[in-house]
Image 1 (cartoon, helix red, strand yellow):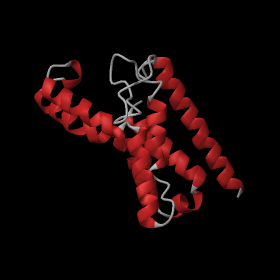
Image 2 (cartoon, one colour; image 1 turned 45 degrees about the vertical axis):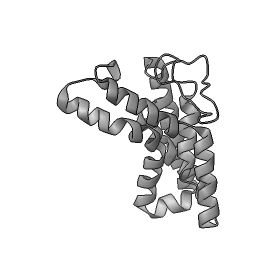
Image 3 (cartoon, helix red, strand yellow; image 1 turned 90 degrees about the horizontal axis):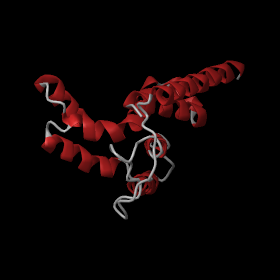
Image 4 (cartoon, rainbow, N blue to C red; image 1 turned 90 degrees about the vertical axis):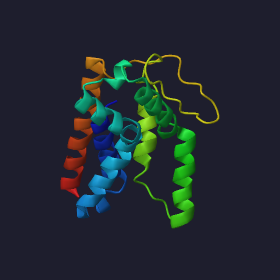
Length: 166
């Protein structure tokens, strides 16, 4: 799924579970957006910026080094194993639950069935296993992409309606 959708979905998630924090401070919204987007931002930001300025599309395989670097980083940022370790590490260090990174986990779970096995399948068990789901519908399919945005807008509208009542 696109990184903007992932960021906004974590904002909705955090507004659902931590509404008092997100209503008081704008930076909690930014933090939630970043935690939802970071699994894609880490592997793809530099290659996309490079591609824009060089007109070499790394995702089309025109820059094999950038493509392989992105694929390697993608394994780490799209691993539920690594997410759980980091999430529990925050709990151990902070001595409280830090909930904003849940968007990272949501990102991985959403990507698992929405990435085809041909192009950046989600290695959610990395580094324990390289196994990915053997099926997947590309999130870029117009009706998948559109449906997810509609669901997200309904969720945000529902949250706004609930917050007005309370």
